[in-house]
Image (tube, rainbow, N blue to C red; front, side):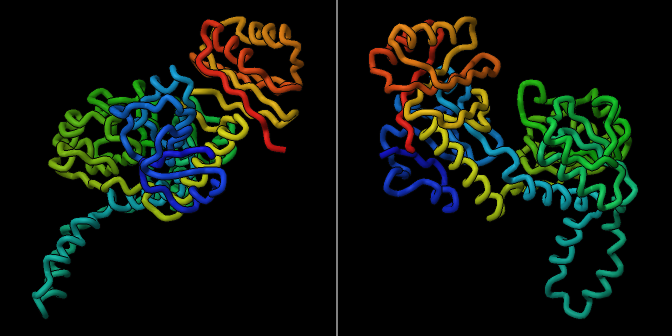
Length: 391
């Protein structure tokens, strides 16, 4: 019986992926092989020695100690694109909220409750206070052309906006999905200087932390409207406040408010609703569960943030899985140990990702425990698993 520790409420559509006669899932599981979670912060948590994998039902993994997991051979999965449509729809709503003073207008209308027959006259007299502009014909700069960024760009095109995109690391898959009418910015600074609206769809990593700062605000058009549905730390709050006071930023819409932002003028704070739809939660849960199940049962990796994607079709009943630091001659040493034990390799796949590598080896016979321990003893090897695959 495989054990999975659930650290957040996970949609039933995802949990149903695990057969009840093969998996035990709960919030009080001891010695789990896998953890499935959403936003639970694992940084102060004692990591179980039995843990093989962590499945994040969502794209951000800031709540997971990635380096600690990598060092211990724990694969961390996320679910890129599973909540993309939900975030895209919120981004389109954000464009409209940034353009028309809808939020304050609604608050004003609410304040008129109880004024009886005066209401229509007050509405007509004060509606000009909440006037705005249309998005049609305006230029939208999309920073980050992953699944969400591409969907936002395409939808904005359909709404009549001119769209320029910037992503130096755009994938082939994303490029295929991007409308031909979306123009490629010559560079990051070029996009910032051209856009009437800017929407951010990049992860929060060292390279993106505070990337929207005083220098970048200085390149923007006066009256720019900015949407940040990615992570709060991407925008420097102190510099944002100054840019708002100087009239550079006309409106800032964020799904990641903090106390500083809540106290700024011309900001619209949304309480992290990007993926808060039943459909998105179901999609994320299903994807996370499928990835965990495939890894636990077959050793295949897809959508890992710390180990390489690696999938091998079954060629025999027995499979070895080796996780190691990405150093030379590792495959040679593993192969030599197998050869010394007269174990034939049926098929092998080796891939690397930054500091770590992963090898899937299908063999003709079941490896003995002593052989597994010998491979574990190779300098740089982090973890070795031996699987008997279901037919």
